[in-house]
Image (cartoon, rainbow, N blue to C red):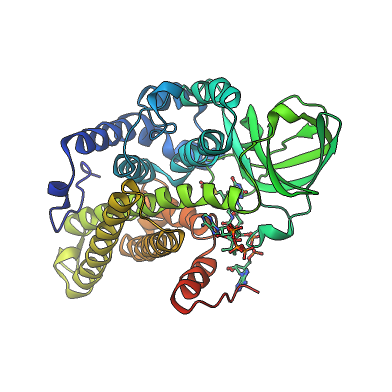
Length: 389
Ligand code: TGC
Ligand code: FAD
């Protein structure tokens, strides 16, 4: 296909600062030149291109909003959102890698960690010299993490962790796992390090979605974790849920990236493809599909930008984040399905992007709170009544 052309129907570019545009353009160029040529192969093989980790770090994409003194890039939330958008234009697995490292590992260490934990881990994670993962979901408790069975028992100056986590992005390649467990005092967060006796992270295989991303179990069998590895400021379920608000914000932008990639590919394809003696794009039905998608993407772009500005003002609420994640991932999945169809048989070939994005988005609509969980979060905000239980 030709060079990527980003849909910007309402000139939202004009609402971005020069720095924000520069960050977006740099990441866009890197994804085009360095990631996309590898995307098909890694999706087919079920692998992540680990050799790109130093380049991701070099561009400041790990924990970009983390203060510079801890190795971060000190960027604002809109710049972070644009990074997620551009990475997910490449692949949801690429954006996931960065989301987990920044929003689910660096964020809790920054927000809930001791100064020693911050100084030890944040520069390593920002530079990609250490990889992290976030262990909340368990085999029997995904949408309802309050029911978790993983336990942490205090013995002297150590904690003994037992339990199993599942569907953990990057578990197998991680140097440090942020593990959430139930202690007598309530839910607490721990930094479990690779090599601690009793801790293992076998890879989960046979996924048809997010194939270019490593997904793992975390097995904890009498793992002794020093008190110094407990996140001292994380108390209760709001600890992990606070991290999810960061990651879900990024996913609201990421979904747009996948949608923009599919839309552009379908537009270019239908302009070039001749059926019944004229360009497919010249028929009314494809035009309706393109008009519907362009409208939904534009509304999603406005929502994401507004969310970013509110986040930087400290005014964005978790329920608003739920609306952004829910809306933008659903619109991306709808776009991917429509675009896949518009490419005919080519739509199922990995030589094109739409099928890969479609498969990936089936994970994105499930993780970080399923579509329906976010429906209920918005419902709770509107009615004052929680319908989760
Ligand atoms: P609930 O009583 O509502 O809340 C407990 C405490 O947490 C606070 N809280 C939040 N804080 C920050 N951000 C949020 N989004 C928050 N939601 C709730 C809340 O105010 C309360 O605080 P306090 O002070 O009163 O104690 O808890 P609940 O048990 O009723 O649960 C509500 C529910 C269902 C919305 C929540 O459990 C939920 O969000 N479930 C979905 C679980 C989920 O999203 N898991 C994701 C795992 S990580 C992942 O998928 C990574 S994918 C890889 C990648 O990102 O690429
Ligand atoms: P369930 O909770 O069993 O939900 C099944 C269905 O029931 C869904 O449709 C759901 O919407 C619906 N449902 C659930 N509760 C209700 C309700 N109260 N009312 C109505 N409907 C309901 N987790 C991590 O901790 N860390 C990670 O890094 C991570 N990475 C992931 C990577 C991938 C590729 C995937 C697929 C998942 C990942 N997850 C991770 C797990 C993810 O967060 C969970 O899968 C998700 O929260 C849903 O949990 P579940 O799969 O147990 O589904």
